[in-house]
Amino acid sequence: MLVHGQFVGKLALYTEGVAQFSVLMLQYLAVQGVAGGVWFAAGAVIQIFFFGIVAVEIKRRAPTAHTVLEIVAIRWGNKARVVCPISHLNCCPLTLGLQSLCHQKKCNPGQ
Image 1 (tube, rainbow, N blue to C red):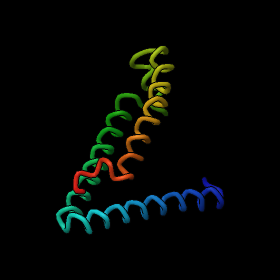
Image 2 (image 1 turned 120 degrees about the vertical axis):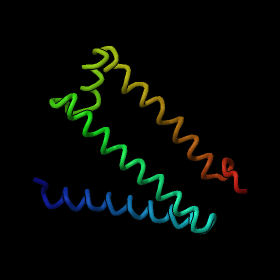
Image 3 (image 1 turned 90 degrees about the vertical axis):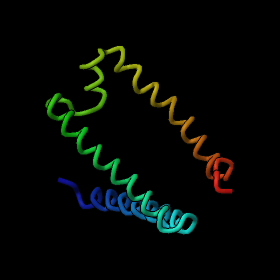
Image 4 (image 1 turned 45 degrees about the vertical axis):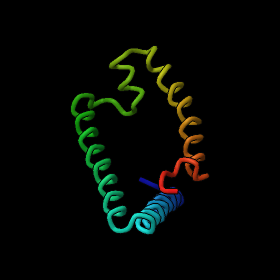
């Protein structure tokens, strides 16, 4: 059970995410019209749909696993369990760097 402060913090993060999602969708609507908003929403629905399918399959195949690292260790061994977070930490700066370039409008094909 969540303590009141934890609940408020999680609610704040959730509402911030919803606000960012809404702003991004409004930007798509402003630039590309109604079709942009429809395609943006369709992309979001596909991700949510596939996440549900993957979650059910993981719980069915590995009912005692709690984290992704436990699944990696069971499937590929302890060496992969060590390499996996290192590779993910290496990917984050690359992804954030590309995202910052796109926010500077260097990657925007519409302009």
